[in-house]
Image (cartoon, rainbow, N blue to C red; front, side, top):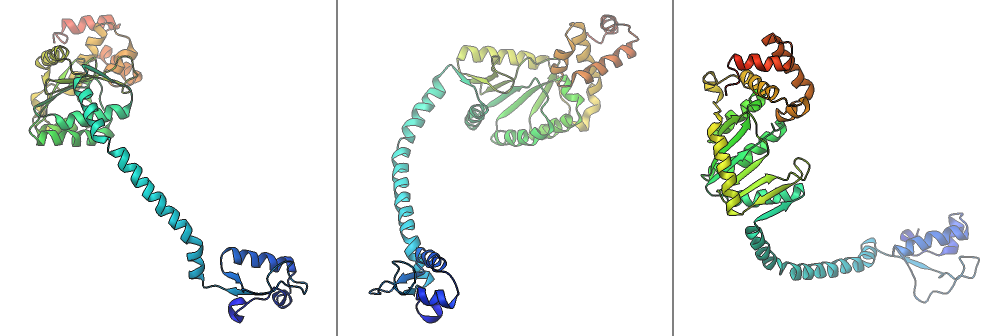
Length: 326
């Protein structure tokens, strides 16, 4: 009505629209709050039964002008806060070089650093991986899930492309998984070398014979790690790793798989070693990265194959047959 007639008289609107004074007053208040109506300057107060103490006449406002009137102060506050945020950011980030220099000094000098969260482990691995130049040695006690292999391939391909020599140890049981044999074949094509052994106690990474990352025995598996830089400790771990590597069986890619012992035989030999050692089923299953039920099924198959009446007898028969000479 105000836009059509050029102005709005509350009393007239009340009569034309057949609304009560309270309804007209509420509508006018809402429009005025949005700056879509403004009182005509000099207008006298209504005195003919219209809204109490209200102006006698209102003029309409252009919505674009009204929006500027409403939003302008808010946008000004936003600009002011943005300038303040930029100032604070500049002051804080001015300390970044100082912090990084001090942190890097600690990172490089601390003989043993404790990492107690997955984020801390991830950051440390990224920093150390970016700095490696010569060699990466690894030992993995467990078989990773299939969904983790693509990420492992990507993380390994980058240092290999820079000329870093990569050698990795896995337990024999890894070869009993078809997806792992495919993964190892794919990694071998990159230039990574693999060997398998009967048992690997803990995860270990050795970078350039100067830094070692080992699992923290005080933390749940995968939740904690130790970064070791003490030269004597690193040399000890390096020699131990090399000794295990020398006793390992080289992995042969799929195209020449006939030249190596079958995965089934590797798994059988690993299980027989664990039976011979008297290890409990739960612990043996964890070492072989399989469920206890699956492990027990393999044991039952071995007892049948050896025609043995007990696990002790199976170990004795296997040793007599030359299966445990490795």
